Amino acid sequence: MLKIEGSVKNYAWGGYGYIPMLLGKSFDGKTPFAEVWFGDHKAGPSVLDDGSFLDQVISDNPLENLGEPVCRKYGGRLPFLLKILDVRAPLSIQVHPSKEQAEEGYKREESLSIDPALRNYKDDNHKPELMLALSDFYLLHGFRQRDNALSDLKKFSELDYFARLYEEKSLKDFVEFIFLQDKSLLEEKLRPLFMRLYSDYVNYSLSKTDNFYWFMRAAVQCEEDKRSFDAGLIMTLIMNLMYVKTGDVVFQGSGVPHAYLEGQNIELMANSDNVVRGGLTVKHVDVAELLKITEFNTIDPSTVKPSSVSENCLEYRVPVKDFILREYQLKAGEKLSAPLEKGPCIWLLFSGELEQTGCLSFSKAPDAFFQKPGETGEFIARTHVRLFRASSEL
Image (tube, rainbow, N blue to C red; front, side, top):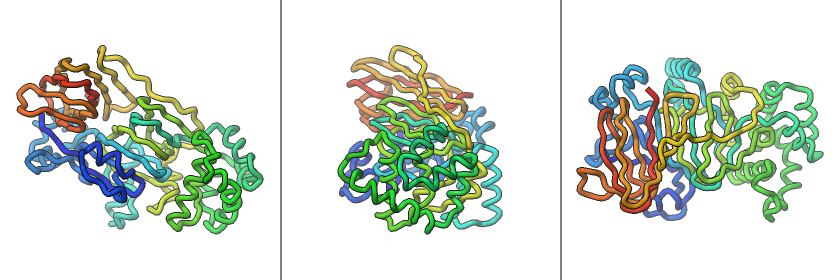
């Protein structure tokens, strides 16, 4: 197996200490560390011990490194991308495209030579994603049942204008309406509610299980960024707020609006960086594309239930074949033979220490490894070990 080092992303919403401490890197408490990518995506390929990049290693010999089935189905690239995230501040509300939408959008934007900062489609792939919570985790996920959303919109008189509109319009028409409004109108309508709730927010009188807490958290972020209030603030009240306990898993398919709010997770997704944003961001928001690819259905959110592969292994499968996540818990002294696969795998040692047959040094968290098709090996846990494996269904 090839040892690989993840690519660190210093996005503004990231935390300051979790990822650098995990990676054993120094930190100043001011530089945000948002994500670590393990894979071959061009925007952040992993690095091998000799300094070469995984994307180049794969492209030099795709058959050896990916196997014929993956080369045929995924065009000479890894099917998946594995990440560690530390979410300190809420991310933008966003939607990911289907495969067909991504191919069409990427082709269109390539032909128009659009400024990279204004692009929705960085590649031609879809981006369904699975997240496993490493801590208490909060996110917005899909649209709430209409009665629940209306209950919140009617809770304060300051929102009467939006409550009436939501009663009169379909979900899609309501979302389109709020996104097409002039920001000065949204500022005028939402500022009174912000002022009403500000004292409760700063005095910790709002619960994180309350949508209004995240309305205020996002509004305060707008203030700090010197941004006008936007339609994303209303979206926080009509979307499902999920609290995900440590170890639970959530899947987000194409077209489902969502936003990570707070916490740490492991994320496994199709190999893409395509994002169509829907507010609460200084980045590009494309309302027309958002309305085009969003699924305007209300849902009751749920977590993904694992299947037990063995006494020490849980497997998480979702409704796409690009990725499968396995989690292994090994006791000190326990051995694990890496399963022989037709396609590539990425292993992430999240905690503990282990040795590999044939290796001269011990591996310590968060070491990661790239396993080629047809390759195998044996791990021996030196301590209690938590180990993740990303693969695909072939």
